[in-house]
Length: 235
Image (tube, rainbow, N blue to C red):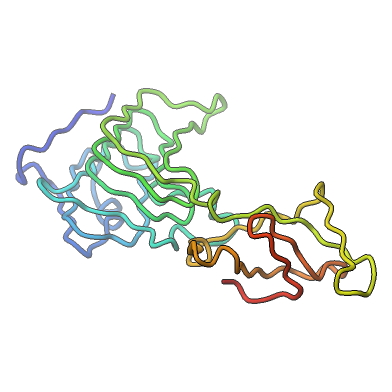
């Protein structure tokens, strides 16, 4: 099990990331079993502890509160990025202590290693899952994970904004000659960044783009109960 490191004062910090600095750069240059302290402030960056780094401790500087903020843009907006996390822990024996992780455009925090401690942290307002712990071996398991004194809330924000979208097919030439089959849905779009956080006041004015397949010129969004007759720019 990873050592339950408890910082009593700043003298315990072996590496200090100053506000505005790069947490990832500190991880990249640190030796294994290093205590990295992060000063208070907002860090608009992703953080990844690779498998080659073992026994690292990432902790808030004593008495301060660092925030890792995806700004609804990180870790990315491409379809494949929806499987990524703002904080990814793959190094065995990592301690992650005292952070706020927020506004990921995908997942919040992911642990893919054994003997890891995550504590005294808050993970919230992720577009997808807040916390994921999974293995990478054939049994898809990890061992000895301590998840202690954390707050995980207001994640899966996508369910608030992504409507069910039905494919519309023209049945004639008139403006109402459309057929929407409830059994045939549009490929679920992956919304991210500013397009993801639709204000409550705009829920009845959702605009979407889609590729023309030669048959479809209109879509029906069940959440907002509106018809869109022509492709428009994203909201």
